[in-house]
Length: 120
Ligand SMILES: O=C(CO)COP(=O)(O)O
Image (cartoon, rainbow, N blue to C red; front, side):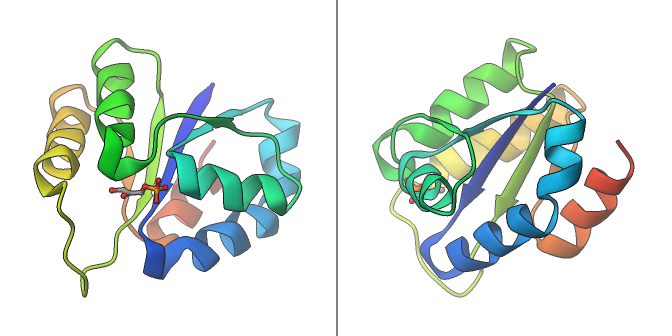
């Protein structure tokens, strides 16, 4: 199973903490994690294995959106910062739209991601 993780700058620390808190379940379920570039770097520094794509503003969200459309990504954890502006908002909306088009579970905050991960 492939899970994509993405976190805006104000939410990156929460994403790292979330993944560390759920490390055991991620490893036991043999989950491949993919990530937008900067999120992936932070997660790697915390000692987790993750495949990095492009940084979000440079096309990383779009790459994950394409994987959702192609049926390669099974779940998306996208910790968005609702209090900040993002120049690549169209890519963000595209990713969320495609999750709905293809009925791919999408968690936009840790509370929802916790429910999803515990439902695996
Ligand atoms: O901008 C992002 C999501 O929209 C995240 O991208 P980075 O992980 O590269 O910061």
